[in-house]
Image (cartoon, rainbow, N blue to C red; front, side, top):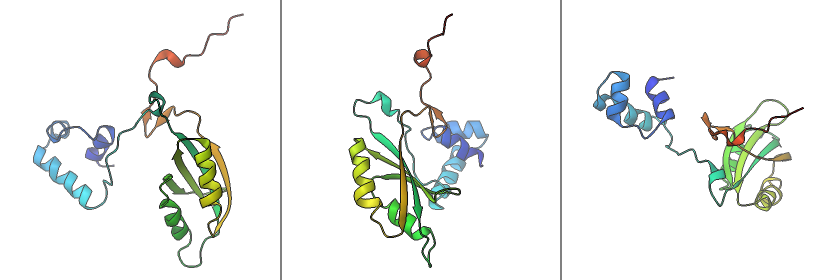
Length: 159
């Protein structure tokens, strides 16, 4: 991967001047490369990685495995596009293995996830089955270790 992209993945807020120093180039060259990456759709967005456990109103993350019947024209893409448009869907991936799509959705409660699966997802034409899993804790997300303190140390077992 391009070295500038790697640096932006680590810290998208780094200034073009600092990025230029790290890369041994000019800030104007960095700005131009970033603008080109944005124009070409290589950089799609800039986001903060949030440790939701630190928030009072944390969200429930649900992982859903979905089996679908591919459409004769469009295969998996059309149904994946339709599913991706639901506002509840945070991420949608085409997978190999025992299921076809892997979804990550966020809601305020497990009931929100239940309603999404029962009312919207499972009633869609082409969806043949789902398996729902609730995410209990994120240890690492998008390459970022979420808890860095010693507060998660397990108690030592003594004889």
